[in-house]
Length: 129
Image (cartoon, helix red, strand yellow):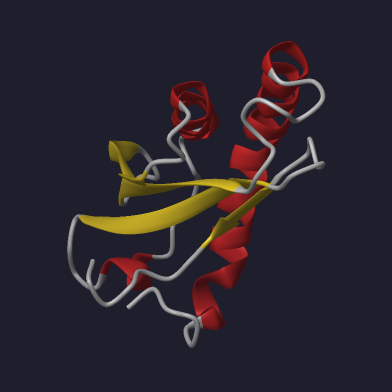
């Protein structure tokens, strides 16, 4: 139901992404400067963590789990902290809940080699989720 064809929720999802990004980018930049300034220890290759956040109709995160680890504990922790610190996410569209009290939304946080800024995006759930 939250898939690439349903752009009617894109405004809300992009606002969520922006709120999370305001938290994530400074934290991940600081961590990479302190722990891997030249990109040779952790970020010599692409690293991605995928989180699943369960959002209630008020915009509060009710559950937050790592669906796919980056295999770097501090990077996963920063992603989770970013989501927690960014909530609540105001005015979630009621249609995205499909009559339920909550909805699961995956977010990906990726760091590329040589790029200490990274990339954050929401993505549709895979068919296995």
